[in-house]
Structure formats: C-alpha cells, structure tokens
Image (cartoon, rainbow, N blue to C red; front, side, top):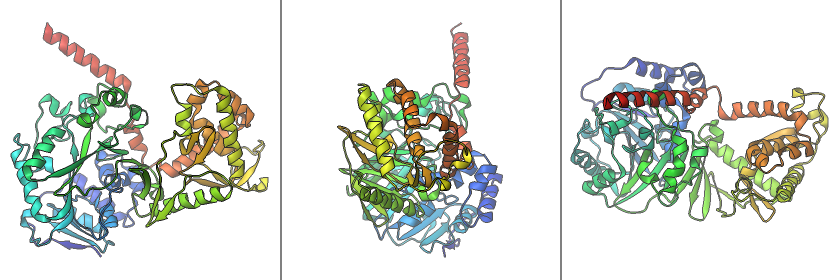
Length: 544
C-alpha cells in the first residue's frame, strides 16, 4: 500500500470548495474510474484533475527500469499513477496535506509510492533520484519575480537531489505560446493575451530562450526540448527539434479553451504559416524540457497519443530514429497493444502484407517506413489518376474479404440496424482499421499496420464504408466518391453504418465523459468576430 508522511509539514492551508469536491469524487470512486463524474460535472478543474488524458504527458516517456522518481507538486495525483506504473519507486511531494491525502486515497494500491506533505526544503531526503518532475512548478517558485535569477537558483538546488546521470523534467506554458496571440487568458493573472499584454500575477511564464538561460545559470549542461500540443495539460502530440510538425498539423490538432470568451483568432488555422516559417519552437504553446548533466536522454523524437480513448486503447505511437514504438500510456493499454500484434499476425497468415513488428515488454516495435500512407496519397496536391484510385480501392476491398473467413448471415451484428437490407458477405472478424490512414501505399501495393479494432460477425461492407467515409473529401475531389458507394453497395446502407460508427466511437472515445472537452475544442467563429469588432471600436475611439 502507498504510504503517507505528514510529520514534516510546517503550517496548514485552507481548502477550496473545488478541492473538497475533487477529494469527494476520489473517495467515492476507489476504482479510479471517473467517467461518471466527468459526465455529470463539467467544470474545468474537475476535468483537469481527474481525466485520464492527463497521463499523456509522461505515459510515453522512457524511465530506467529501476528508476527512483521524485514528483514535486503532485496535487491530486493526476500524473502520480502513470509515474508509478513506469518507475520502480515514486516519492510524491505536495505542500498541502489535504491534496497529499487525496493522492494517497487515489493510488492507495500502489506499493511503490510514498507521498509526503510539505515542502522540499523541509524534507530529510538523503537519497538522490533518477528522475525529478516539475509540472507547472517553476513558474510559481518566486511569486512572479521578473528576474530569472531566483528560478535558476531553485533549479540549481535540485541538483543535490539528482543523480549524476539523472534527468529533470520541467513542464510549463510558453510566454510566447501561439494561443496567447489568439487571445487566450494568462493562466495566473487571468488576462487575455497572457503576459504579452503586460499582465502579472503570482507566477510568471518563460520563453524558450529564457528557459535556456535559466538552465545554464542553474548549472545544467544538457537539455532537450519537447513541444506538447495542444499543450502540456492535455497533449495529443509531442514534437522535438529532431521531428517538428508538418504544415498540416492544424488540420488534426484540437486546440481547446475552457474560457474562450477573449479569443480573436482560430489557433489551428495559423499553424500552417507558423510551421512553414520555422517559428514553431518559439511559438509552441508549452514546453516539456528534459535536462541533466549528461545527454543520455529519452530517444523519442515525436509522439502521437490516442488520448481520448478507453484505458485499453490509450496508446502512444513514438518515433525513435528508424523505428516506431507503440507504448501503453496506462497499464491497461498493454491489452490494446497485444491486440494489434495478434491482429497483424492473423492478417499476415491470411496472406496480406503487414508491417513486421515485435512485441516485447508490453511495447510493439516496427520499422519506420518512409512511403506515404494511402490517405496521404489520396490527399496529395498532385492528384492521383482516377483509374489508379479505383484500382487501389478494389485491392482494399479484396483485402477486406481476404482478412477473415465468412460466416452465416444469421450472425450479422449490424442486422438490427436494417433487417431488410442486403448486407453482403458477413466476416467472422472485420478489422475496422483497414482504412487508408492505416495502410502504406507504394506503386499499388497495400501494407497494413495499426490493426487494433475488430467487430465479430460483421459485414465486410462496414470496414469498406469506414475507408470511404473517412476519406470522403479526397475521394470526392478525385471524382470517385459516388462511384465507390455504388460499386460496393454502400449507398443504401450508409445511414445504418453511420449509426454503427457513432456507437463504436461513443464506446471507444468515451463520448459522455469527454463530451465537455469536445465543446472546449470547438472554436466559436461568431464570438471571435465579435471580439475583433470590439477591439476595432476601442482602437477607433483611442485614435479619435
């Protein structure tokens, strides 16, 4: 069992009503599943402290097998559990006894966890740690002091607690983050445009250059910058200087804002120019910085996170040189990774081309291919020839039929959606990821990867529907969308299969629990236009 240590605490603090509510939710859900809470309580603070999506910040990060971790500022334990899953032992520290007790309740079953209430300077720690984490801590250590010196002094003091080969992990917002240019509020002062507007509070933000200056002054000799998007709180992607995002990142990114009332620009639309002009590292919304006295850092160059899924599907896809590794963000995701490996092996035995992979220690490793996916080929600025597209889709249809033996029509899992329809061939197992996003395409050859999702006793038309639907815009641009719907008998079943897709997505993406996040991630163009008009009026008044 996890252990609480409160004997070193000096003083006590008040507990907010919000903190009491979060503690009550933790107490009422000892299994650690908070979907019911997130469905009923849509406040940002509740989501921030209890959503599994928080685990994406460290769920992909490589810890030494015998790592001793010091987590400074554990709060209600949003990241403590994922650290305990990946390290040999975690020492978590929080200045609030109330939050420390909540963290213990949340992770009571973790035998490799000790939680201390109090401040680091009051602790009798004699040991040194392999990893020290500071998430949104550095901005607060000097009460917003404008000088960089006290922040450097704080980090310099941490070197006493870090092994010579150890790593310090810092996560925080960027003072020049793109979201602030779009009108987002400062997280500390609450003012729009962040510290760009001159706002100040009891903490401060840093630019990339300022962080480098702080680290050098603190005595660190090596550092590596990671850029979590949309930010470090709820990361969907993580980039590095070795693997920066492409210009199309804005098309797949979901910037979110629980308080969007001051926004004047749509953040996602700006990334194309930001990336094309080489400005992304300076304007990234937040940083995760790995620093130490040696350059033996995590080999990950970029990460794509399935961050809004059920725990078994919360998987990080990591680029590491010439290999791709799939890692479980949470312990439950080992099951999902195992399913991908087993399904790829089944498809290989059925005679399909698949990316070779190796399952080891709960992670799936495969070579990084440089050929485009089928989706990228369909969306290429140089339009593929119409006949080549039709031929590729026909090969995909043949592969779907080849992927599994047929079963009697009576077992059709979708029949209830339209009992009188012609559902065609029913497969023993339909692989729902047999879509262009999960297929490498080269000279007409289809090579499958990332095949984790299945439906038993399912029509072959359903994965074909998903392949067509997910690429409808590109196929329409190529002038083949309607022909594909007719050729594969999809048109009369479209509405029924769309209903099945919504059911699948609701289960997989936890639609009820993460409904509020979806709302935060939808920009409000009308509100932004209104805010721009207000600024224009204010500007005209000042000129007059």
